[in-house]
Amino acid sequence: MLEITKERLLWMFRTMCTIREFEERAMAEVSARRTFGGMHSSAGQEAVPTGVCAHLGPKDAIASTHRGHGHCIAKGVDPRLMMAELFGRVTGTNRGKGGSMHIADMSKGMLGANGVVGASVPLAVGAALAARLRGEDSVAVAFFGDGGANQGVIHESMNLAAIWKLPVIFVCENNLYAESTPVEYSSAVPDLARRAAGYGIPGVIADGMDVLDVYDKAGAAIGRARAGQGPTFLECKTYRYYGHFSGDNPRTYRTEEEERAYRARDPILTFRQRLISEGVSTPEELDAIQREVVALIEEAVRFADQSPLPPAEDLLAHVYVDIPKDWLVRCTGLTL
Ligand SMILES: Cc1ncc(C[n+]2csc(CCOP(=O)(O)OP(=O)(O)O)c2C)c(N)n1
Image (cartoon, rainbow, N blue to C red; front, side, top):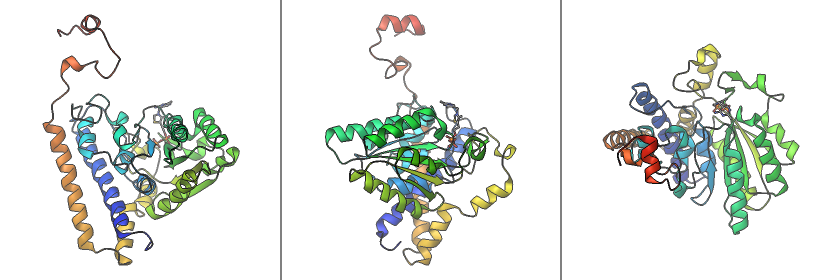
């Protein structure tokens, strides 16, 4: 760990804390019905986007899933704009029209969360192809779940990326369940990374509860991709602390003992202990970071709450292209 700079290690700690605080606070706001729509919490999975995105710059692209808040934060999207998006406000990343499952910020290389399971993968392959055609050394990362891994489009995308040696990394967040379906029920092989062999690309397994393990293995995969050696399938074994979405009770399909066992390996707590025991940081320094994170998310909620809703006349703007006003008036009944 000591070969990684302190600055980068503390960035990882801060990023994981920001994701956790955002998820916990967003869940409370969703439950209080202050947002539009529900959400899928990634609490517990913070080490995966953090360890991967630590290697990425603004020109690199990521494509995300319905459980995308952590990916957005790790790629540098402003949590204030994300919270405003959840609140349906005009200051949100998508002007309040997308909500949790569509957060996108092209200026950060964040191509979008995605409500269609598996759809992140061809988007990332397309971004990798674009980088290749432009002669750039940027890479693209596709995040998807263990359930998403069974979508046909993922296999088509992997095959194409493999034969064209595209600079893309397939990051499977295996959190053991797709909604309520256990992975051993839906996959013929317990380790999804084994499927990489079918495309002639490396298949690597990382401990998704350990940010340093993810960091090491993602670094190798991203290095390969930048060097023109093609894609890698990186499976991160992880766990989501909450149900599939904000209204789900996970105890109907998994046990309290299992949840407790994963929480005992909490990625933030274990990393914090490591930073202290290896002399990288002190409890006081890490407490100060955690206080700053709490203040940032508090400010994000205040920003969202005080922002206006989109104006009614913008109802269809940014949704369809060039809609004639008389058609809009006819369809919506609004007086514009
Ligand atoms: C194409 C498609 N099929 C089904 C769904 C419904 N659906 C939403 S999330 C989900 C489970 C996804 O599981 P996984 O990929 O493991 O991701 P996780 O929720 O565990 O992060 C399903 C089936 C969908 N949104 N899109």
